Image (cartoon, rainbow, N blue to C red):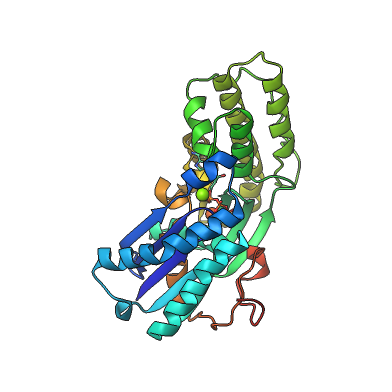
Length: 341
Ligand code: ATP
Ligand code: MG
Ligand code: FE
């Protein structure tokens, strides 16, 4: 079957056509760097308005790229949360309108399930259950992915997400927005040992995360004026690597039945993090799976693919399903009806 996927939960407006054979017939992503750059971060109202402007042309674009019309599509998948609610509503309402007009079923996708299942789009051999490190702008979690809609959360962050830490650190180092790629770029010229920084929660028994103290320590080190920006960035990135590796090590030890160790979400685009996690997986004799870089950050293909997996499982949603600003993955990916859009 052929699924149209829509994504608008943060600052990427995206759509894709993906089929159940994992073929990506078309995908388009429009970022909003220019709009948010002056503010050093995503401004929700500006994001929502940008999605309004861009989503329809992007949907028309992917249909044209693939040379199909809506009649050829079997279902329409749209992110229904979690995320910035204005943006989520734009994508979900567009999905509902297209589904209604074309007489196709709607699939309300949890954005985190999009990230969680995206490695299976790229790697057909990846089987359930797998241990997932989900590291994105708003989340930092370790999950046992047991099946579609079936997640056990082993750990989460007690304060900031990993991507949030990258973004805040980039801002305080004057590297601009979006922060993760900027930090990674300048860290290549720095010494990861140059600045002594904390590794919050490393060594604790539960594999939870914490990054707020690390960011504050970077701020203090930067204010001292004793360090090069490249050294600060490299030392920060190394501290994040050490935290992610240590916490994942605890989870891997607790999940001997996991078929693989998988990383997904925007921060999974970071080369230093990918390299360290590859080594960790090898130590546990697990296959390491990470989606290609473009599939790590927000995109429509991951939503279309999660839609394809849910469609294959017979999971579609009513048109009165609500958009959800918060939607934990382990609360079940089930519909909430009749509240909101
Ligand atoms: P969520 O998925 O939690 O709702 P989001 O959709 O905003 O949040 P993603 O698009 O998955 O998050 O990821 C964006 C985050 O990834 C940003 O915080 C960004 O700084 C970070 N990121 C992107 N590329 C890199 C990189 N190369 N190194 C580190 N972080 C990166
Ligand atoms: Mg983004
Ligand atoms: Fe995301």
